[in-house]
Image 1: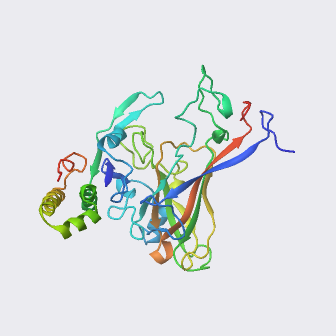
Image 2: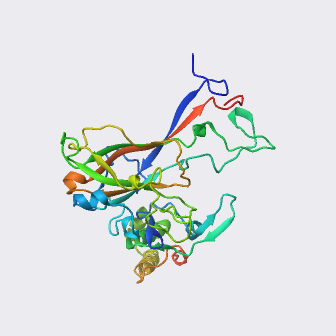
Image 3: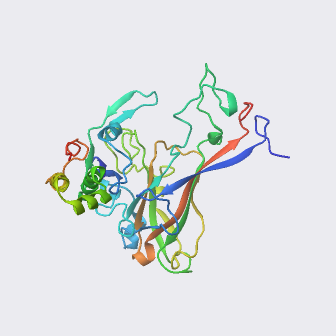
Length: 115
Length: 246
């Protein structure tokens, strides 16, 4: 994840090691206050760029939220309807993560995918 | 007999040691070293390099990638302001300096001013005992400031002046290009703490990282910069307040 100001990287985080957790926290970087805490300027040059490693991390987190690895193993071993449901869910998440251009992991579309 | 402050109380020096972290939020240490590669292997270019353009601030391909990039953000985990600024107390007990009618942001930590030091355990190039100046690099340290017009430039307007790099701890042309020499023996066997900066008036606030830039000077065996430990020190002084518990 890159956060840029005027195209210059001002923050870089490896996948899953973010100090910002949502768009609102990044948007706060746009506000410039004077010493009296008066808003004097709002930047329009703050941008976020995601990398495929970020997207895969979010996708993996979302899958394991519903199906931790131990649960995936059990369902795979047992088969049946639960396996079909899990496969459908995981395939949907993978479709989300394989979009071109890359999806926005903070826009809520990933959370809309449920088993 | 102790030294008394102007408040006629015993002066007590103390220091808050702020840990420095890797880009992955892990403590920097002997087994978790950061290596910053030289940007220029041409000595004369590195010798005169200062900040003039956006491209001077970040390795475009390998920023914060140890062993590959010429720029790296060392995270300052906590206490990232040079002065007492944000928090006020309205209470007077247990060393708190405010009152219900007169809130205060004063603390013993800032009774020296904004006295900070940057101590680092550094390696430069490869090899033991190469002689002073044999292994060297030209480098700079920047700090970010959230809430400013520009995070890495101190230009007080929305349009950054890229010559105005927010160098740590003070803004000067000298701080844009610091020559360091040293050694790096094996798995960083020869170690010491080195003071890169020591000032009483750091103006920084809302800082979350120190950006190390290795302008270079020679091949990586001569000019790569290894950081094997470090801390930002905030120097405080007890006894300067006339309050009962300060």
